[in-house]
Image 1 (cartoon, protein in one colour):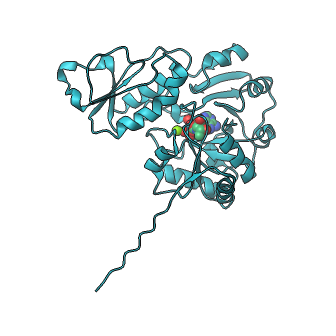
Image 2 (image 1 turned 30 degrees about the horizontal axis):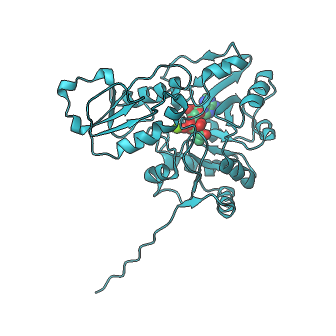
Image 3 (image 1 turned 180 degrees about the horizontal axis):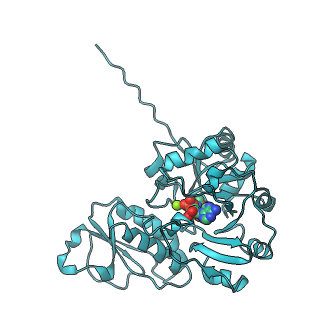
Length: 332
Ligand code: TXA
Ligand code: MG
């Protein structure tokens, strides 16, 4: 008896030329999910008006359905299609920061099915600052609901290869738009009545938002019923235990089994198995852009522990420390 084995190798990473963007947009229109680049992290998108398409996102990510999704728009007019955005603060924020790493949570309109908002009366909306994302939304002709394109709870993807590593066997199109240059997810602000509250620190520093809306509050880290999974105590974790430098006792360590995520390369002399320096010039933008990239690289090493420097919590340092603390919490 002879067996003939046929291996079908599907190439899922597509360069983002016009033809492939059209192909991806057709897939979205047909109710499929597609991974696409944004300036923050890669997203896993579906037609936000199609509940069955959106349910595929939850399935692929293994995401609890109590975690609502962000709706991505390419035109200012689409904000009004999906939400009640008649609000002075909204105008000020989108004029200044869109397209960009800022998500607004506003009362939703009926066009948005409950599965997108997990039954909340509000919807999260953002206009990404990435040409491929904007062209894809335009070509699809509808706003795209998308969470980050990773398995729930694990590291966010900042390249097409990161997406393929986690979800490659579950999706058929990943549009490649290069390395995400912001590197951490968007800052999320809720605007309800006259209150403006930051729900998740992210790629737009809180100090920048304060310049436009001085009264902005920061949501307390209450995590039993979080409004955003970014508010869960454990999230964004690599598959290898992560601790901060001040939590480890060097006498107990085999440094050949340790990877070190250094802020600027200045703190520790030891030779670890592998070291990554987020920024040699104390540049927080560079550090944020490298954060998930280096955590993915460390996760691929044969090590047992990642040690990370703490970072001063100002500007983008707030979002970076938020992600590192949540990664460390998984192992506490
Ligand atoms: O930068 C980003 O925001 C990336 C890219 C792909 O746009 N997206 C992203 O999505 O980080 P995700 O699903 O990983 O995080 C979306 C966050 C969640 O924390 C979710 O709970 C919150 O947005 N969110 C969505 N709708 C909400 C709502 N109605 N009220 C409060 N939070 C909401
Ligand atoms: Mg996410």
